[in-house]
Length: 210
Ligand SMILES: Nc1ncnc2c1ncn2[C@@H]1O[C@H](COP(=O)(O)OP(=O)(O)OP(=O)(O)O)[C@@H](O)[C@H]1O
Ligand SMILES: [Mg+2]
Image 1 (spheres, rainbow, N blue to C red):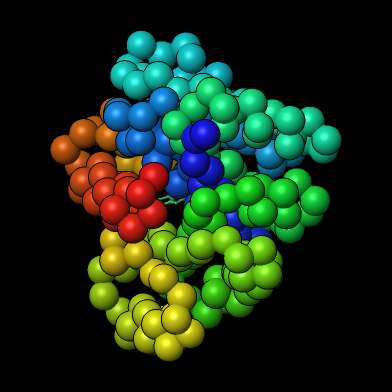
Image 2: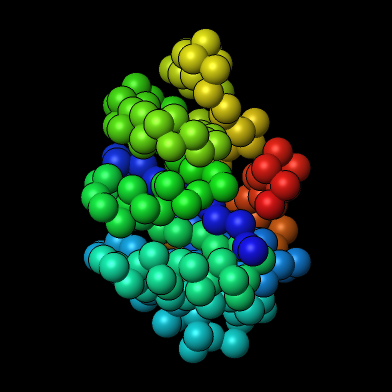
């Protein structure tokens, strides 16, 4: 059975879709990977279509979309056929997002290192705790160092929540690659964005054996 990473965060624009796509491409270098788009906005599905039409997409990965009762069936099918399924969820904990979190081997929460993003993550953290699902935070669009970032790190550590050591910076490379249906590791493999993303994937692999 394949493992499931649900990327969730109620804060809109936190980087869920971007992170799902980017990680999927990195993991697809060594694993059989599918992504499941359960967000009605469908951005990841559009990315998948762009991906299917570019010769620059080096790694095979399948993009599916599902909602409602179809979602659980689709997820079961994908888990049976792939090593890893990444789910991009909407910025709201609806029934589908709940299902995604319940079925996750890792609930991955991207957040800007600022209090409103952590406040917005509380619902996801609570649900993951209730469902006893492993959860981890990752800073996205993070400055390398700032007083606020340090404060956030301390607060997260004090609550005993796992925060990945690797954070993602605010880099145009992510958006540019996404716009072309690519991961940044395909579009510019030696860029700082590609390197930090690989480091994050490695951390996920080591800590969660995914
Ligand atoms: N680290 C980053 N550097 C630069 N741009 C980023 C970064 N992360 C995300 N973005 C950009 O920010 C915007 C919002 O990101 P994204 O769509 O992934 O957020 P989201 O959490 O999925 O939003 P929604 O809640 O609406 O689904 C996108 O244009 C994306 O390309
Ligand atoms: Mg999104």
